[in-house]
Image 1 (tube, rainbow, N blue to C red):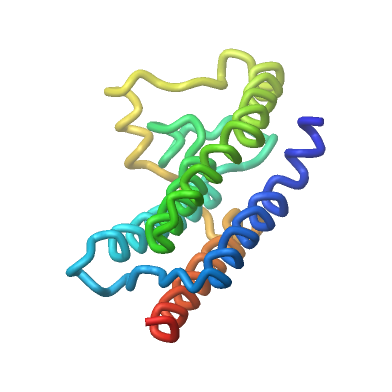
Image 2: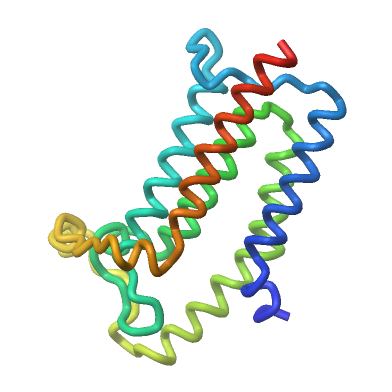
Length: 182
């Protein structure tokens, strides 16, 4: 089951959120304007989405999947920066949309899909890389944090442009929807 969820996690997450966004549109729920600084939810959500997209992009340019444990850049400080970035994106969209049900949907997806996947991946990586896989102590991690070895070719190979592009497109669509429904 975990392998099936791992292979299809993006599809399930996207489908789940698409259903919630469609329900919000049907209910004529107006998303917050990401450029209206009079209401913090829109700009804060936009910042979280962009921060998550950048964190994922940075992480995808550093990681060499299944070849060596990642320990530079964001991996020096976070065990799962790709998932952390996804979580930031999801929470950011929830803030922009402004429907509390979407926050509960994120919590459900994290609990039902991502936590089992993370546990499975950690078991696999510990078995594959042994003691090399793990977090560094904080002071030592800073040295590796500032020496990220980011690679555009890794970023492309990991197809992170999909998440980055879709995040920007979805923010633009929510901005347009805000203009239409306001």
